[in-house]
Image (cartoon, rainbow, N blue to C red; front, side):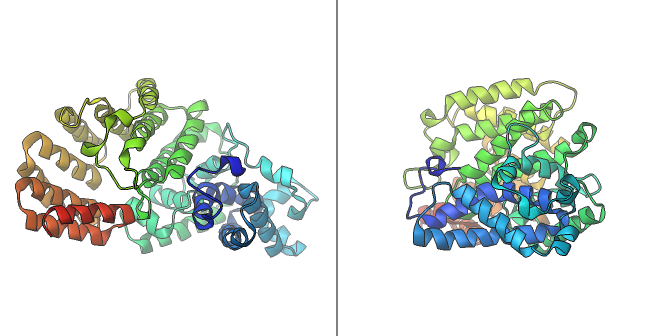
Length: 434
């Protein structure tokens, strides 16, 4: 990635934001490539060196300016830091078995820039990040551990962000990641793409990781911006790679791609000129990307094969109904409610139940929706989930109970780590007559 490839919102004086961008966009691929060289046992070292390279970038770029090719700069520095940490030949031979088996007689110190860059080849499952996702989703790990390890190691999520994505505690995620790494090391897992016959058993976990990666970008759980387009674009890039490969182009793959494209089509209207969140009912539908909506429809049509319907098919169906509604008032809420009922049969998720309750409020009235939400207030997984409080606040407004609405909005504001969501909730509190 050269200067010409840097997103327009970053400038030469915006070093901190640019380093954060590279952390999100490049660190997963870099960790994947270095892990292939030095083995899974050294993943902690690799992650530390990548973090160190990013810190060094922040300091050096602030003094000397942004280099012509920032990605290559970070890759080079991180690689050198790992090699420095393993400079003693005996230590290298013990810690880099993958490299030595593939290159007998050579030491990792001889890995030149061209060889290193080849690890980032795109366009197939030789893509290092995608390859490592399949490695991390080893069938001997539980699904929860597979997802936690992949999000933490390859998608640039912090422990706190993984915990929020999976609606669980940070301590639980920390233990899952540590246990998964130890298991993979004990199993002496090869860092090569699994045999094609093994891909279907791992594909579901990879889908879920990409789904959560896109979700974090679509509605950022922390930081200053409401949308992290770099995360969404990376998720779309990786799912498109899966859609091009014979072993992974399943109906669920196309359904997930359709879902991402339907949501991406609405990006231009999701925030105003100041970066503030615009809710669905406030959005200018004329700004929605009709070409992306058409691509999403085509992907959803392509997913309609086989006998199994996935959650991605149903979620994409809901997103399609939103995208095709001429206005918010003309949304086919009854059809959306039926799709949520099907979703809950496939996967009884508390978040799906929350979304269904909001739809019930549009089909049967706000009191019916509030009854559903009040039941969910007893759900342990949603205890610290700010969107439950926000939804209760919205329905209290519709019911005319502004004091209760304000209390729910204030509770939601305390629970979210997103500056954009806090700003939205502050507006809501003000509108209720604070």
